[in-house]
Length: 108
Length: 120
View 1 (cartoon, rainbow over the protein chains, first blue to last red):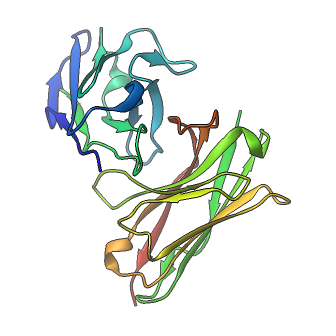
View 2 (view 1 turned 180 degrees about the horizontal axis):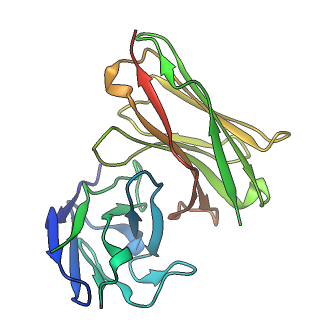
């Protein structure tokens, strides 16, 4: 099983700042099959990025993903108030399809 | 746009079977893998299982001996049965759709979550 470790656990930033979230895998993620999701309280997760760097339909271009192998990053270029939420990475390259423990992005 | 909705009891007795059904619309059943995911209160996400309309399945080994996923192609529904539940199975349960192209893909569409509590 691939274990995904996200850092930091909590990130405190202000609107307009840039956010950088990390996801490290315990072994290489096949074919960059790594996704990022955003979850707000009481809501289902929303797909932001798939295959490490492809934005999902309707996702603003301030969200960008990068990385390969075991190290992946989600960047948010200019934080909007609606971006403060919990972010999860997930690998779907090998079963079981695992999630990271999440990074909480909070308003400073 | 694919829409998914979970139905089932919100309370299950310990040692009994948790049964949930996901109804979907807006797509052909053959275009997606159909998944179950759960999230214990205040915790992260756990993928449980998927099924393809052909009956092909995969399960998370952490639950494999207790879980069964099935599909009803005539009703555009798929179901989860989790046997011998304990308090550790208390969670918000989601169903989700991931695009089928021969390999697993990211979970594009999600249902609203349904809270299932295991308690007597």
